[in-house]
Length: 320
Image (cartoon, rainbow, N blue to C red; front, side, top):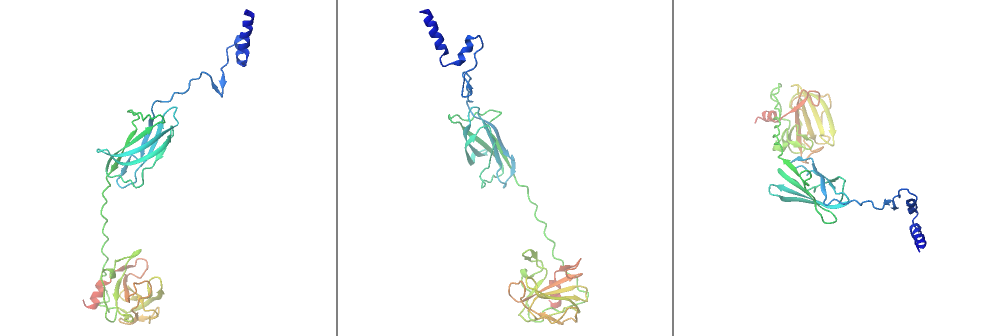
């Protein structure tokens, strides 16, 4: 019986296990493997709770009215690949929730940049951003002094904006050295209101002259003697216009004249009161007939030249 039992024992030891042979040869047994993992190797034990390794607003301080900062989040839980997460923003000290953001399944060990709702505008004060996490087993975030899972945002009051420096009042021309001039519209007229004045707002620029409303065809005349320095037509701007280089050292600009009404040519010498053109509405205007009248010191659109408010001169010439 004993030989039979020994033989059976040997048979059992050798059937289907080639790795058992070295034990009889006096060598150390090699590790048994299945699918690349050694039998007997301890499986990794998952951490009991997830931990917020990073919770950081960028930037931490903003100014009231700015967009809410982004929040950088990273959760660590060894042995767990994904956890469910959400953010809650609370206003301090009342702890009133002002925003919530569900992050869904968050991959552990990776940093995620979270954008808070674009419509969220935080008022001046302090806010608490709190991270809530739950792993697949239902276990929630472990909070500690080093990794509390919450952070703060500080919203500063906007800096007071200094009131804009008022624009200097438009310069009024000194009385003309040529003495009292001739009013440039030879007929009934109206000087209009604020929109007709020098310095009134226009699209992309300010009004550089005075509008004088009158019936279409009313004669426009020279205030002083001088030389005609330009006549032309600008469909996208001044319409039909005349420029007078007067004996008082200033240039006078007459715009929106009736089409083909100009009766002077360039370099012509004219006397005060000489007809130049007629009141019209050519170029870019509101459509009602008027003379756009400018006075330029030094020269019309030359280096050092600048327009000045014509109204005081016009009132003086009208005897007002």
